[in-house]
Length: 274
Image (cartoon, rainbow, N blue to C red; front, side, top):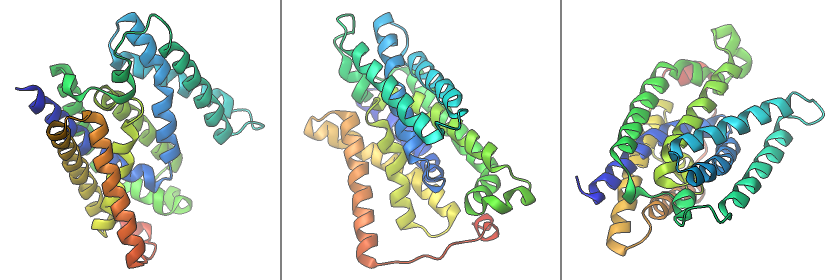
């Protein structure tokens, strides 16, 4: 398999996994959490690069430490969850920048910040494939709980769903997706693959299930197109993928605004029907 084929497959797998997941992230209004988690990975990535350890391990460690600190800070009612996230992420990102500028950091710092799709290994492809399959299975099995929790949290418990647990599980899945995707897309670009595809999918499809599928298709197609654009124009692969998906999202928002389309809110029962 050539370098180009590996990059193409990696981008398709990551887009197919992150797109549907991102749809639920937007539905629960957790886009700030996605941005926060991506920044929280930087210290772990920098330490892994300095120690010569796998970036996957560093990313997981960075998110894990940030999550613990946020949880502890949020327990203080004088601080609150939002302030805890803001302060923690700003602090750890600042620490990551300091680490990234130490003399011991390897020269390929750009790989940490912007990813290296052209340097993916067999292990990276396997991890992306597992992520894609695991995300698809998890979202399919949890569709009912997710739909009920997002459309009517107040009635969710009566329908046998705990909204807090659903959101917690979703954030765990988000963290796992970011840990895998950061190696190809980098610390600064991974959010684009999570947020942009569902924005386009919401324009293309009306029913919830159709939007989930469309987000996966858009993510995979955008990833593939980004790699092709990178190859043809000699641009950075990760940045090309992010730009293609971001442009598609901006176009979708523009078309929606121009059309002036209004959609009515759907009940949990309607959501479960698709």
